[in-house]
Image (tube, rainbow, N blue to C red; front, side):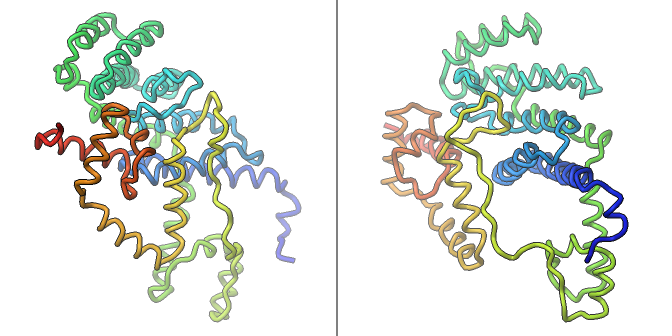
Length: 357
């Protein structure tokens, strides 16, 4: 009834493939934005949807393989300081090591060869630096040997890093010059250049036009997601009869997609610990209700204060699992919703104030 004459002459399969491609481009741009902003939660949520859409049969995946690899690379860098997060079948391969492997396959996607080489070296240096920062000298030595087999870095740099690892000098000038922040900034430059040469903002531009036009025609009415899918003919009908609104998407909540944590694939965009996945799902559930959102804000305020009991749990956890294994410590004690990063920051405070016995 609502189909037009063009619907009969165009393959619905091809239309779906094109639409899926636009949606994947939108998610890719969103991933890049979250990465540049350092928004960990938004990045992981978008990544889950991106991976699900990429695996859809309606999408021409081969045409978007480069974006998939870049997304996989960003995921590994985003989790670069979490040594207990796995991306490979081999548990000895840490996030930045895996990132280096993915990055090597993107050489043809990087026009600036100096930038490609710089990021390669930064990944190598930071993979070693993070291990030393967490007090894992043996892991740092393993990283050196792993990269030595890859032959993707200057030999004199490897010798220099080997000496640094032997002395466990975490504040060596090499680490200061090739810092993690510099790695992020260089990747930001790569993303800016890539998106400039490979525009992926079709849906964003269309949505921007829609929002701008809706602001002119509506008196502070919230823009509904369903309205974006309304055709021009339906918009004209709506103007004639403002009391009726067509909603093409069901208002019934759908089940959120979540990664299958029971399987351990050799290649994956992201591999989160089970606790992180649970936290992510709980966060999505809380966001569905304004009342729950306000309760969540109140909980955040009460969580911020560290008690003597929580400090003791943190100290006991470090004694049992070692400094840096925050995800394991989280599993043993109730830290009232705190994350591994919060534990790391609190541990630094305890060290500075000499409260660690």
